[in-house]
Length: 354
Image (cartoon, rainbow, N blue to C red; front, side, top):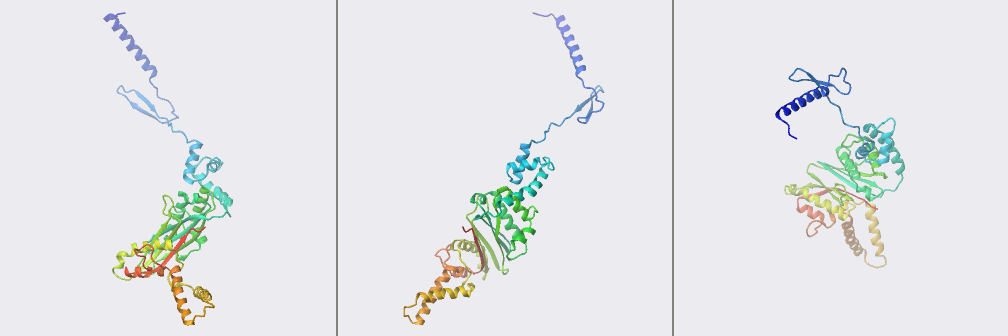
């Protein structure tokens, strides 16, 4: 069907009239008291006022989403997080849920795991200037000790120990009750958080803090058997060497690190023969003399034999008398250090023993 020009003009007029009527029907009128959101008046070219209202479409997170967030924040089990969020005084508030877990969840978890045997774990080391700490923390299983939560906790302990002013062996209970982690939380609470997340008995078993004996000393350490993505491991040593010549200052740090590796491998018991307790020396001599009973050897010969056997004894237990396992040719440790212009002053070795 074809329309004439007059017909087209008539249709166009009717369509324009229809659009005008639709626009007048659809045009918003100014609400007297907007409640959902503030109404913003806009002026158009015809001085007519239109209103634009905005409404928030952001929905509150679901319980499942809150549980997921709380688990990521605390490491607590899913059911514990769900219970914390649904508690009336918490009412799905993440901050309050964290406090609830710290207060009730940690205490419950600690009471459940208390007394269980803890034979696995990690050793952490921290060296800062003239101070170094070496700590041992135990867990029940190797799986738990290799977790990021556990290794992070161990390193927090080592870091806090170095930051303090205590030297030598540390009163662990007093230290945990007063020292703080990197977030400013008391370490005893950090321990409870770790127990809540891992659900195992965790014990801070030993802690030693070394301080350089002089301004010419250098501290260096080595960690063996490191956990994944961690600076903590199954064994560690910290060594102090003192510079005795100008040449030694350039090689001190590298030499100390190598010596720390040797300490972990050779496991010396004492620094040098002079540091071996007298009762230990006398007991060893007594055993050697008993072995020669009935040989009819002259006393002076027996004394020479005992002296030679004691040298071997010292080589087994004294760091300075051992053959350096890391240096080429395996020279005696004391001689290797002397050739570098250095002297061994102290060491600490800590390892997980089962």
